[in-house]
Image 1 (cartoon, rainbow, N blue to C red):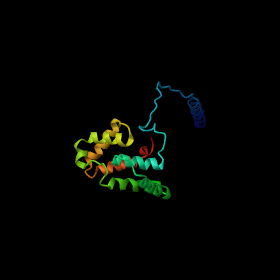
Image 2: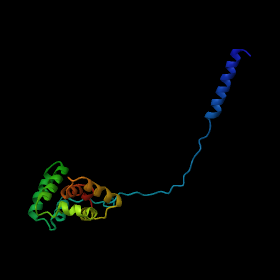
Image 3: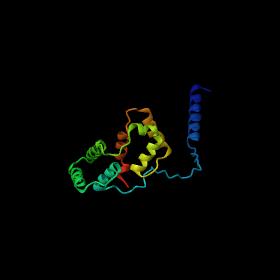
Amino acid sequence: MNTSKKYRLFILFLATGIFLTSCRKEKVYVFGVDDVTVTQPGAEKPNIKTDEEFISIAYSDLFGTNISQSELGELSLSYVSFGDKRAVIDWIILNFLNDPAADVPTDAEMRADVNLFVNNTFRKFLVRDPNEFETWWISNQIENDTDMTPEVVYYTFMTSNEYRFY
C-alpha cells in the first residue's frame, strides 16, 4: 500500500471515529433532592419602621422610657431634613449611646456571661432569639477582641438593617 492511500485511510478512520464519538446523546442524571426553603432570621419582618417609630423605639430600647414629644420632634426634623439617612441614624444612635442615662451594661457585665449578653441583646433589639451560629460568632468576636465594648455591640445591632424592620 502506498503512503498516500495509508494517509487517506487514516483520515477516513479518524473522521469516522470523530463522527461516531461526537454524536452521542448526553446522559441526564436525576438526583432525588428535596426542595428546601431557606430564610434568614428576621426575614419575616416585612414592615419598615417610620422615622418617628425608629427614633422612639431606639430611645425606648436604650432608656427604658418613652421619648418626649419635643425631643422626638427635634430628632425627626433632623432626620427628615438631612439627605443621608444612614448618617443621621448613626448620629442619633451614637448620641443615645453616649448619654450617661442610657441603659448599657458595663464591659465587666458583658464579659461575665457573653452568651447571656448576646441572647439578651438579640431579644432587646431584634425581638427574637439568635440561632446557634449568630450566638457563636458574636460571642467569639467579644471574647477575642478586648476593644469590643457593649456600646459597639449595641451600635451594631441598632444600625443593622433588621433593626429598621418590624
